[in-house]
Amino acid sequence: MPFLPLYFQQLGVQDVGEIAMWSGLSLGVTPALTAMMSPFWGRLADRYGRKVMVERSLVSFVVVMAALAFVTRPWHVFALRAAQGLFAGYGALALTMAADSAPRDRTAYAIGYVQTAQRLGPAIGPIVGGVVAQLVGMRRAFLVTSAFFVVAVLLVLFMYDERPVVHTEESGARGRVTFRNVLAFENFILLMAVIFGLQFVDRSFGPVLPLYVAELGTPVDRVPIVAGVIFSIAAGAGAIGHHVCGALLRRAPARRVIASSVAVGAAGAVVYVLAGGVWLLFLATPLFGAAIGVATTAAYTAASSVIPASARGAGFGLLTTASLAGLAISPIVNGMLAATSIRAVFLLDAFGLIALAVVVSRLMIGASLPETTAPATEEI
Image (cartoon, rainbow, N blue to C red; front, top):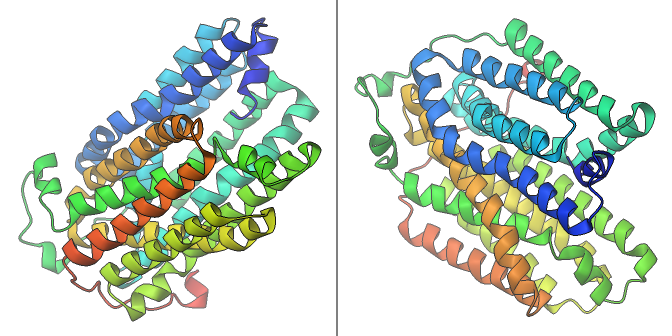
């Protein structure tokens, strides 16, 4: 997807503004439609099973990615990306499956592992995609991507064992669970706001970081590599944060873990605001990335603890909608704000994270999660 503008050039679009328009529309339509459809697919998964819904989503990606190799017009790309958004949803269901598969005292570890993979995938994907496109060409790269989704379908089909999940404390939560019921669960709306805020802040760096690196005195020819390294550090630190969250939740309730990690992220954003040189960004980024990773996994784990297994698909679908809303809104708001001052973007991040920390510490009902224990080596 990062190379989509080049693909539009191959399709005969030469005007830079037109390329930017088609690229923006095609990249934006998928998360927008996914945000709307995730609760619907999650609700169907609650009724008919997670496995079949994930297989449905992955098979649609096999078809869409293969079809992208044969398009001849820009609107073909947009239409296929729209179809991809309509039939997506495996990301939220993967988290649901992780929560279902793990004992309740291992839920944080299971969600953390899946989120680590979700964060590392986009970090590594553009590198792999660039190599593949160089070796086989842009069109055939879509066929290679389609083949990766075929592998994913086979993994789910033959290796995921979907068994009924029964928790004794949920035995009274029978019958039809509506979206209104899910929103009424303890802390759920607050956790949706937390996930939206974390995603909004996390994605604020994309439109402005290269410009900020240049503003801090980095030579123009080194801006891409320096910004790329900082993005990679943030992704790696976020993955570590996802991974260690389970251990932190063993020692403290979810409310304290979320509030503390969000406060640490705010401190990292303040360093960005005050930075007088690029070297300070290299110090603040690991702090910021790890804090966002910990807070995100803790929020999903806390939500999982209050959602009955029979409604987890709908619940995680709504959480994904909040996450994708942050993903869609953040670049627009922060791009406009950066027109005034790039530092104002990071100042907004800092204030937003401080507000989240205060709200969580004051309003979140502080029920501790079930005691988590580190997974045994042979079970990893």
